Image (cartoon, rainbow, N blue to C red; front, side, top):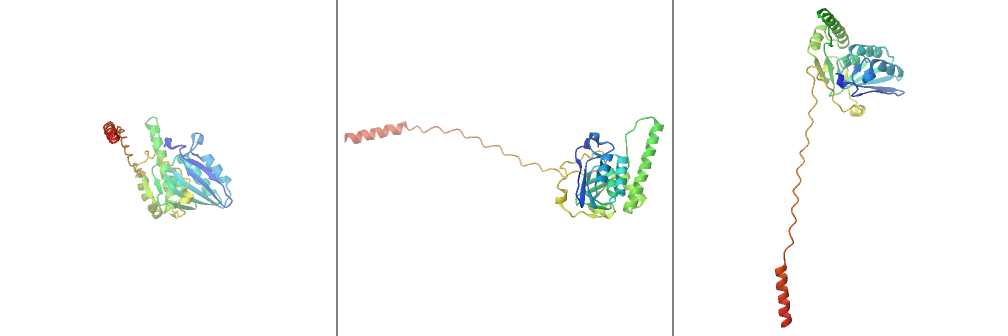
Length: 248
């Protein structure tokens, strides 16, 4: 996940009636080294006064608590907020998107939910404490997903344990999205062209392979120049004919 940080972009396009925030990067607690910092996001969101705010997602996830703070800021904002899943709303980005009033997903978009994980060192007691914290986090995520999607906690526990990726149709069917995004490519033309490194997640969809260009044919070898025709014999005959004609 760390090598995704700062790869994309986080910025806002303010407008009088409809503003847009692009969340095309990893979610982080501190954006000193790049990414979508929670403080920067909340400050940017609260600076917008347009009646409608669009949040455009191509986000591989990130810090769970930073995502929770972003989620809360979205819920408390007075504007109508519409989330657009242009690419991924993975991990922490999934519940950030669900905080919006509407969630629209592109035909090629994906939602992903999974169990919380971290890196820890320490003795057995300390590691067990960390495991207990992760279980509590999972419990809060299941509650949020259940409230927003209408799915049962039992089903959601199965999905997060399996690290489940939902395509557009599945996301709509299971309540993660309210509909298909029909705005088309005009609204999504600013999406970065990179592919996220999703190696940390299980079952991640792979980008379509890029077709190899046709091999460039080797240039035909330049033919050697043909030697000038040696016409000395012909010239000799011509001279003799002229002499004969002259003598006659």
